[in-house]
Amino acid sequence: MPASLRLAAAVLLAVVATAPAARAASLDGLPVTIENRTMPALCAGARNVSLTLVSDQARRFTLTAAHPAYLPMLGAAEAPAADLLACDGATAARPEAEAPVRTTLHEDEGVRLVGVRRPGGLFATADVPVRVGDAAPAGFSEIELWVTDAGRTERVLTLETGTGLWRMRPLAPEGRTTTAFGAGAVIGPLAADGMRTAIESVVFAPRARTIQLAFAEGGGVAVRLAGLDRERIVLEVVFDRPVTGRPFAAIVGDHVVRGVSEIAEVAVREADAPGWREAPITEFEGAVATDLWAGRTLPSRRATSAPDLALGRFQPL
View 1 (cartoon, one colour):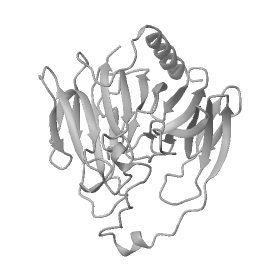
View 2: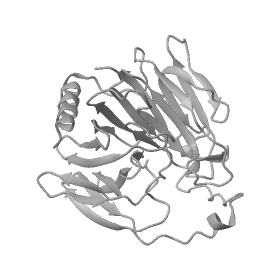
View 3: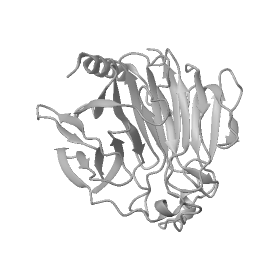
C-alpha cells in the first residue's frame, strides 16, 4: 500500500475513534469556496451539473445522501421515465452497451465488494487496479458495495474508477425493494472540466469499511462508510494532504429542466450566516460556505427516487 494511503487510513481511524456520530450539518466547520459550473443541456444524461469545492486547508469532510422529502408520496412506484427531450439523432440512436461483467472481490456476512468491467457504452471504461487484502490487484471500470440488512441485500455505493464519481443511496424504505441512483460526488484533485479525477489504484479495507484511493498525480484519500440506514448513507472522507490550486470535490449530475433533473436546487449555509440560502441550480452564483445541499423538493422524471446530497463538516485536521 502506498505510504500516502497508509497515512490517510491511519488518520481516518484515529479521527473515527474520537469523533461523535456523523451529523447532517455543521455549526463550526471550515468555510470552502463553492463554484457553480453547471451548463445548459437539452438532453437527459449529459452530466452537465458541476458544483466544485475549493479549499487549501480542508482535509476531512462528510458526504451524506438522504432520501428526498417527497419519497413517501411515490409509494412503491417510480415516476414515468423522461423522454429524451431535445437530443440529437446520434444520441437518441446510441446502441446499448454490452452487458457488464461482475466479479466478487470480497464477501462477509454484511458486505460484498464487486468489481465491474464495462466493455463500452456511456460509462468510463478505464480499468484501474483494485486490491482487497493480499489478493493480486485486478483492473475494473467500476466497483460496487453491497450491504445485507434484515435479510435484504442492496447495492448502496458505486465508484467509477475512470472518473472518480461516487454515487450512493440509503437502504430502501419499507414498502420499496430499491431506489434509484442519481447525482454523485467526485472526490480528489479535479481535472479542468470539474467533472473527474485520475485514480491510480484502489484498495478496500473490509474491517474498516474503507475504500482508499491513490491519485495519478500523487496523494490519496480514505473514504469510510460511516453510517447507513433507511434514511441516509454517510461517507467520511480524509485526505492525506490538502488539495491545493484546484477543487478537491464536486457534485456532478444532470439538469435539463426542473422536472427532468437529478439536481434542481441548491442550499448553502454561508460562514456566520443565521440561516440557509436557497436557489435553483440555474441561478446559484456560488458561495463561501460551511455546508452544501443539492437535490430536489419536487419529483422529477429523472431518477425520481434518487437521494439528495449534502457535504459539510469540513476540517483541516
